[in-house]
Length: 153
Image 1 (tube, helix red, strand yellow):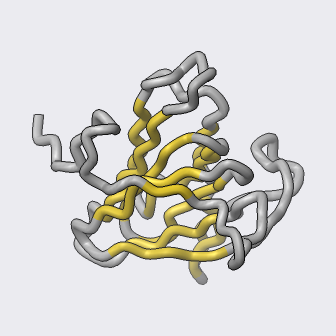
Image 2 (cartoon, rainbow, N blue to C red; image 1 turned 135 degrees about the vertical axis):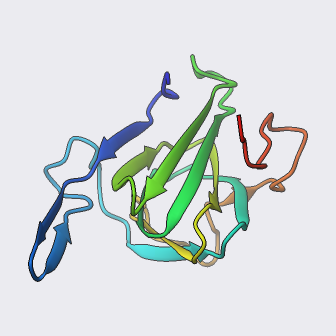
């Protein structure tokens, strides 16, 4: 899959032992790290879609730490060489990874596991309660050429 300009997908290393496991998500010396804004988690119940939105100021860094998510990106930036491209990522317990989503790229996710899925996001900016950097479209809009239905073939 050709990635949308500015998107970075990185497999995470899981270090298991007899006590459990350790997985680093994002380090200040990682190539994908720009700056720290805050850390938060968001969840989705099985089959639920949370989409679409984008940011004008911040990049997001998604890591799914429980369950499985289908994370979908749509490049609708006017001057992007990858305008119109869609990227689909399957992230979570069976594919530990981190995804850098650049500002301006529409994104959303769907829980595809049979349990609630948990996403850790590490955006580059803190959330501004007075003027949120969040711009939304409905999950099922004709403006974005994507169908959230399961693809069986």
